[in-house]
Length: 339
Ligand code: TYM
Image (cartoon, rainbow, N blue to C red):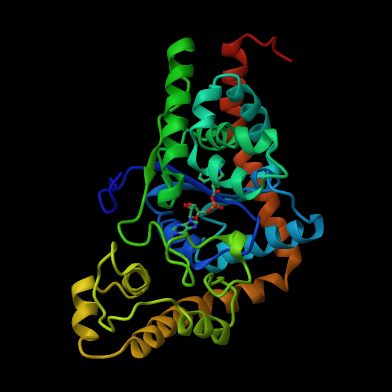
């Protein structure tokens, strides 16, 4: 679905998640979270930390726990009020794993084999191409279908998984009558695919934490400025949008546009006759100012573990209430004896 065409005043449901497999990046913010905020008046909003999905790639257990809690603090710091949005850990709502198993049985080997993310991840983790990595999309379908979500706000790279979710839902509905709502991806017009600052051919990714191409949401202003100063550009020395021939500069323009709200034409005219040095510095500064209040608020929240724990508990309770209704329906339809 195109941005800005959301229906007003109807309480449709929005749901999304992010894996705590690395620290969240500027890409996660611009591609996804930015579109989660300020929706609670018009939508029922469910946002979770996809820890079940994170273990499809080997994780250090202590670090996974830490990142999961950090991520919750960052969700809240980004403006997701837990009183108005249901925030939870995926593993706290057992219905995800249960429906994930059922949907595995309605997802075809060929469909899973065609998933771009599976191909990329298995190339990068050749020593650990496990079953979970392969069946990842049926668990993601379960995440979405359990809540009968209308819209799934994500970056461009998740579109294929949502299309598969729709196919699985249609297949199931076709076999057993209407059970699942068909969800639509909700993808931002600008910022749907932020590229690495050090290699604009590759997506900015959590798995590149530590690389100067990857800006983390919790990075200090100095670290952020260092990433932007080192950003790859080209030899033309002209701020002009050309996604084909000027990938580095176009990526920086996308970031600047997403953060400032300025159009590409406006950015081109603002920087006409000025060098890349100015452009990189001002883009970096805009990102520093965007992330500063989020980082500071997340740090404050992390000092109150009891509060974060209570958010997790009430989030899981509210999520499980909805999830259980769908799961019960599904178990009945496929022919399981009632408990
Ligand atoms: P994940 O954790 O890889 O990414 C989280 C969200 O951030 C977006 N994103 C980006 N957008 C623009 N540019 C980038 N460089 C960039 N990097 C990440 C992603 O598109 C995503 O929206 N499978 C999902 C997690 C998930 C999920 C779900 C999402 C599990 N279950 C159910 C929605 C609904 C994932 O791996 O996201």
